[in-house]
Image (tube, rainbow, N blue to C red; front, side, top):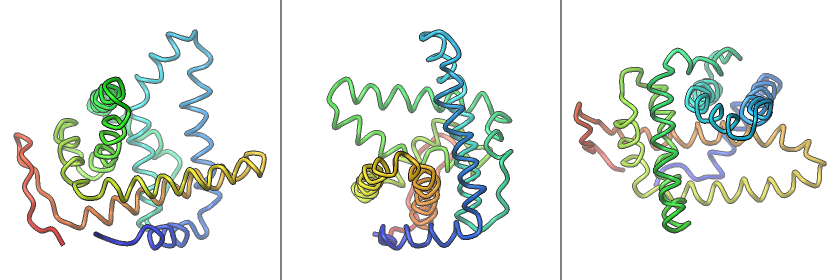
Length: 210
């Protein structure tokens, strides 16, 4: 079942060593873009702006925090690298959004399952510049087979830590945000080691599952 969640958290902490300041600055910029920037517009238009920039920003965030998780050179401008692939990132974000919201409308649980199953989508797109959004979604779903509960538990841990951050007057979120992002990047790299392949029409095959 891959690396234990607490071991992944330990690895994330080690990866952030010496990079906390950079990771926190990046998280602040990310938070401002997705929460403050759309608020400058009227409610309905602000929501449209959020959807338009959501995909490229998610792809950029995946790129930045994967670099930290892998011990590579991480730079703030990576947060905006997703705009170089604006159309596929935008389309992918809309598809993911509609799938998750469709599940939420039917019943909350299917929406949560969908969110967990598609959580690796933008990490996959970051690693494969040529993969289509649909294939990235399918590959994420295949990769997460048997790992949704593990990610759900990791998410619950973050929520618990988030409650503790409230006691710090919100300051703790500046550390929890980057830490959670690197943990998710570590989670992706861990299950990505199972060697999945996807063909041109999006049929996923599994070479190994150990």
